[in-house]
Length: 82
Image (cartoon, rainbow, N blue to C red; front, side, top):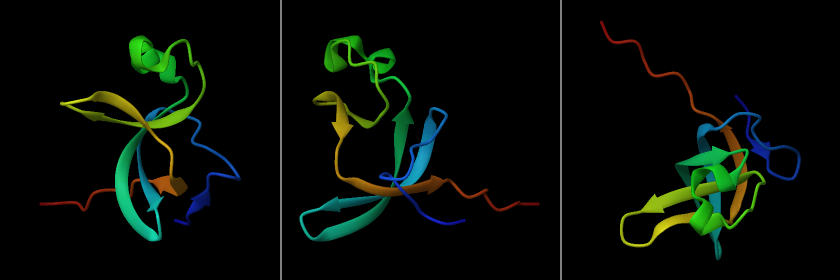
């Protein structure tokens, strides 16, 4: 699988994805949520903002949008365990 730039495209389906997150000069690889409609996740937080976006949930602050994602890819398949 190859990394996909968020400048080129976003996922077509809601779900969890492997992402590259850049904060300042540090890049990390994480798993985060994507939705095609932020408003459907939490209308209070995203105020009629019916557009695609990356988001997370923190028990202390609630839902928030992730803004510094540069690349994404589908999660790899889990290894088969006998």
